[in-house]
Length: 313
Ligand code: BDR
Ligand code: CA
Image 1: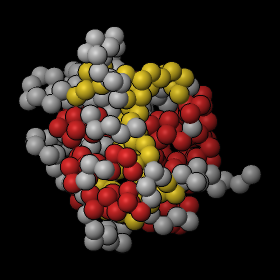
Image 2: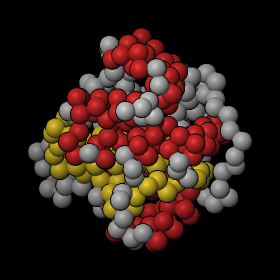
Image 3: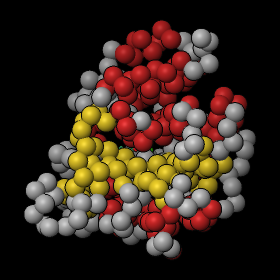
């Protein structure tokens, strides 16, 4: 049994990442919410919707823990232009439930203590919550089994600046702490996942006509439109969902290398860039499993299996 905490800046791809975890049979102990894609109250609201949906559709109890609503040091900006004001298009999702009355950072520390060596932290958003937990108690490094990070670039092609990926750019101080802390950390970069978009498969998904396929089309259409018109992509990307698939199934990864990676945390043109020591010239111990290739078919099989769930044999 796998045990996860999913750390979200709750937009379309974050929500489907939660669904993929639940579809795989993993236990998701909580959704921790952090600053990022859209306004913080909308992110919490979307997480509550996802939690209610998960209870009904997957029979899973997943509680929502609001966490850090701004980076450790720097200013940041949300990206409603990318995901829509609601994070799943223009309208936010609505829910009737309330978040837990416990801060995400307290929850993360408690879970690490309760399940030492078992919790996997799926970081598909800026790393502020995990960095805060680490600052409070450094021993968390040995208690967390794995940290799966959607973030950074491998070839220096960013999405929020020419060289930086959004999650790392939002809170580079947090990312620098987390990358250098000694976690068992795997990184899935932005300029890797852009090669594995859903292109013509969009039409196949339309034909599925299941509850999840309809949700998928509705949630991702704003993002798809943005990616295809503003980001030179052939279809819609899945940064968070690919990271989740990487976490769940080693067969999704076709190429990976262990290397030393640091984060540029200056207030400068290269803020949030991930610096990979390809040649080991710094002489530092490798600290990150860097993913360099994805098996597109294996990933799409996971996505399609999820979207078909509940549609009969
Ligand atoms: C990442 O930033 C957010 O916009 C997405 O949710 C994803 O986690 C991509 O850069
Ligand atoms: Ca995200």
